Length: 179
Image (tube, rainbow, N blue to C red; front, top):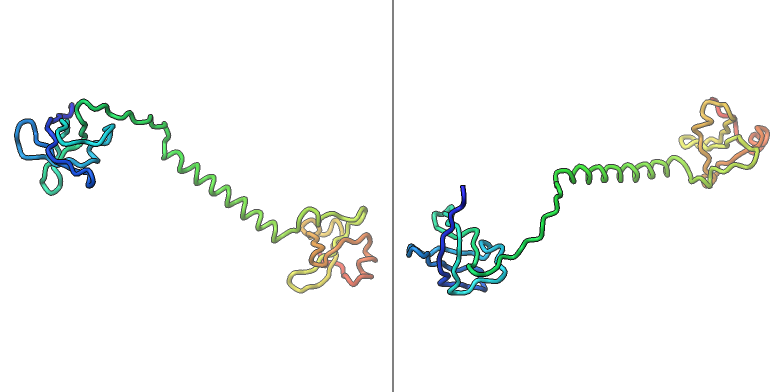
């Protein structure tokens, strides 16, 4: 169904407050016009302008103009909306946020569990890991093939080190790991 437009003349306009009144062409009671009803007008209205509008009844029962235009005044062309589906963007932003948090948390986890790669460099030919227990402070060494060898990380900043022989580790006060 095609909307029905009324026609009337603007009799009052308070530009500083953004509203005025239209005298309908058929001579009925004046109709309230708010600037927001002239969304596409290329200029502000003036007293004497002919206004085309749809008649709307407000919640309080008063009549007002909506979807209004000024006769003889070109409507502004609105920029074309980009075809962006906001509902499809939200999951992408959430996914990016989750990925970002995973990266941050994994870096923090790795930082707390292992030193930088520079600290992992061994002396050539030395494969015995001298590790200090976090719980007891005991100095233990791990030989290749032992149960905890692969998971043991050496952090020289904590006093941990590499040994070339078991006798070197024992001579420096380290004892062999139980596993």
